[in-house]
Image 1 (tube, rainbow, N blue to C red):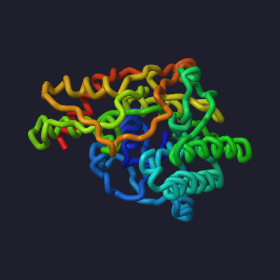
Image 2 (image 1 turned 45 degrees about the horizontal axis):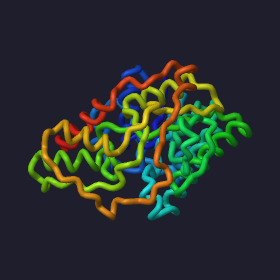
Image 3 (image 1 turned 90 degrees about the vertical axis):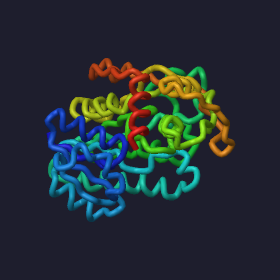
Length: 315
């Protein structure tokens, strides 16, 4: 299977590249820069890498004509809800315009590839307790530019499938964690601070935001496995949740990380890290993905947290 990953140097993209290679796929990857080339160090020389910006339509046209992929996994774009609040224009430019360019180029190929559009549970926004567990049919109520951009991707996928016949499948991923996730997300933020405290590089104080929200965490390696199943076997025009089906209180995640090191720390709420929350509980259902593609999460959260902490210890 000849695969193309957009955003291959990112957190999810690098793990997906490793998984596709282990499955015997020929892997091509694109990203805007090699700033995070350490993420793909394990696959250096095993994938064909191109430095391309999805905003450059002509470059994308040329690349797809050359590669002729059978499956495209579209992971590129702004992934931070917090940054989208600060710069909504850039989030929309990257996530929406870049996706339109990719779909336009793909539909002009003689044999259009299957396309996995990766969206997010952030689309559900103002979740109500009666909505839990969330299914693929739950209402979308986006609360920031990142979530809104993913809602637009959802409808772009539907439109390009219905109008042009592009074989598009949507993979709606919930929070995923593991080694290589950059700071700015809750689990690596905790793990980085605790690793530095354990190494004597930081005073024994962990600065946190809201610890009372609950989130559905899945290991990134389980997510990568789901992406390939969806890309190869998923029904076109469909949406699939990728989640654990459980919700963890953020406080419990922090306590698990602290307990694994044995260090004594003080937990201090940092007002700069607090954001108003209208999503106190997020928990999804992966029943459809299990029923149709026999996928279940396999990696327990304790291993995900342990591997994340070890990654930050080695950074």
